[in-house]
Length: 122
Image (cartoon, rainbow, N blue to C red; front, side, top):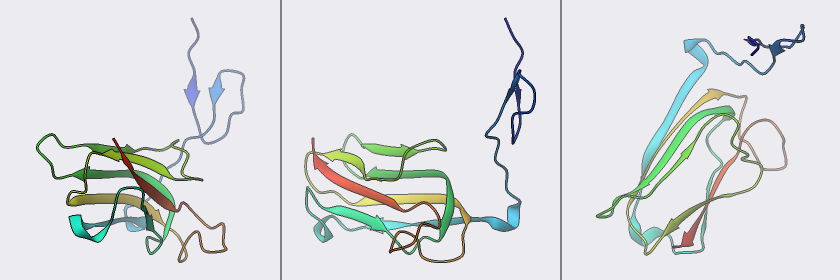
């Protein structure tokens, strides 16, 4: 049984790299709601105005009798779209916590995480 030290960069054999940290000033939150009639099943929801260099945590939840949620944490592959399976369109709420980048992401640039969600049929 080994003891592993979590660090920004692995130096020794027992080190595990990948630690990220941010100061409070760079942490930013985007949030809001999406009306049920403004999208259809099969549509893509692209959060292109969120200037996220790194997504720390994001949650998208449907307002239905039994809520369905999509939770995104560090390590989640956001290079393509993520799926949110719904039986019908419902009002959606979202909260995205991220480290602020330098501008818009995903539109011909590679500066940060672009969050894209496809609303699929459950």
